[in-house]
Structures are given as structure tokens and as C-alpha cells.
Image (cartoon, rainbow, N blue to C red):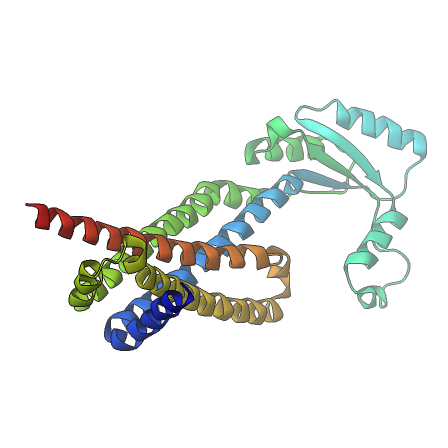
Length: 296
């Protein structure tokens, strides 16, 4: 048994050497398709994270001219909460705003300014049903008309752009992933078919010698598996290097490009299993077709 297994494994590696003119172009194409597939999945994951943070953009920040008494804070808050499309209202004092600024930004930016330059403000979040650019603009305009605030800000332009591109940001990465999987399947099938044609005499001799389907198929399946592992593995390694370089150059995108280790491993496994499966299907179809021809 172990002797047969050793022979089959050696035949797989011998096939790589003998069929290198067929396998090398297939391997390069699998590498490129795997690189695009992994990049598309990473981009799709980044889009999903961006869409998760989109909910936090549906908020209005209304800045007061200065500190106001607590009873006035309560009155303004109740009035804002009764406004249409408003889900919650939070009052942020000047000290709290300064502390939050220091947590997220470099404190040296405030060294040239005396005192606390950040005024108190109300953070007004929209309810879930009103999370759209039109309602956000309505709430901002309503807050401006209230007359309590010195400055009112809302990321209307950002949410309009995200809302306009939301469908395309999800649709095209998914379509590209499906197209690449189909392309990989065709490439692997053609590669195995060419390898079969070049070794047709060997396959027929193994069949006439009493070799089972599994015995004949094993070298081709192992070849396909190795192509998938090598091609997708090199693609994933290159993508990791590219992602590290990108996050070093643009630290702001690091939050959207982390935690993809498992996803990249799954890409290698998926491409490898796909290569092995279609290698099996191609060889099995060939063996069944030749058996039917002999019966006729």
C-alpha cells in the first residue's frame, strides 16, 4: 500500500516536471486570479466595515457659544428630543470635549492656545428609520433654526456619497469574486485536460493493468491541489506585503484592513480545494468517456 502511495506521489511530481509547459501558465494564472480574489474579499470586508461606521455619521453636532446652566441644558435637550427624526441627544461639556480631543489627537496642537478652545455642544443622533441624507439635512436645518447654537455641523456630503455608492461598493466585489471563481475552475479544468491528453497512453496503460479510478485519479488530484496551494499561497503572501506597505503609508486605512488573517487562509484553502475538486471531475469524466467509447 505504501509502495503504491509513494509511486502515485512520485508520479504527481514527475507530472509537474514533464508537463511544466502546461502547468506553469496555469500556475501563473491561478496566482493572478487568487491575488485578485483575495484583494476583492479584503476590499469587500473593508466596505462592510465602512458601512458599519456609516451609522455613526448620521449625527448632528450643535455647538453652544459658551457654558450654560444645567437647567438650561435640560430644557434644550428636551426640546431637541421632541424634534422629528431624532433618536437620542447627548450634552458634551467643554471639559469632556477637551478630554476626548486629547485622547484622539496630539495634545501639542493645543499648546499655542490659551484655555479650552472647544465649546460645549449637543450631539444629536438620528433614529434608525431616519438614517438617510435627506433626514440628516432636515435635522441639521431644524437645529440651525432653533437659534440656540453658534455653529451646527453634520457630515451631509459624506453620507450622500456613501449612500450613492453603497450598492456598487457591495455589488461589484461580489461579482468579481464569483467571476474569478468561475475563471479558476475553467483554468484548472483546461490544465488537467491538457495534462491528460499528454499522458493519455499512461492513463490507458494504468487502466488496462487493473488500476482503479482512485488509483488513476490520485496523481492528477495531487497535481491540482499543489497548483492551488502554490498559486494561492504566493498570491496571499504578496497581498500581505502590499497591505503592510499600504497601512504604513496611509495609517487611516489600517482600521479597515486588519483581522484578515483567517480570511486569507480560507482563500488558500478554497482555491486548493477547488483545484483538487475540478481535477477529480475532469479525470473522472475522461475515464467515464473512454469507458463508454470502449463499450460501443
